[in-house]
Length: 130
Image (cartoon, rainbow, N blue to C red; front, top):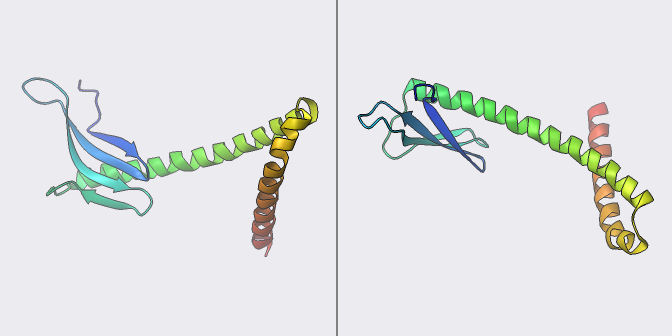
């Protein structure tokens, strides 16, 4: 049990609930005591109830927030690379496997989405070049 971390972060949208993990009790069971709520989007750390967070608590929470933001950023980029793969697979499907009825069902939606994406990418690239 001594290998358990001092804190547990229950991930939720935009952050986490933060618990202090305690195994130092008579029953030798794991107790998790909520100490804070974290919002990644605005960087807010709210102590739970009437708690006062220690410097160690704040340091652990801030370290987790940095790590979590890095994980989320990596996932965003990975999702984009997956989207590129899906576009390539969709192109192959449209060229080699799709029936006329299937193409009729998806063509307008795909063309609009691709046009929207192209417009944003071209505008952003132009902004970067200036």
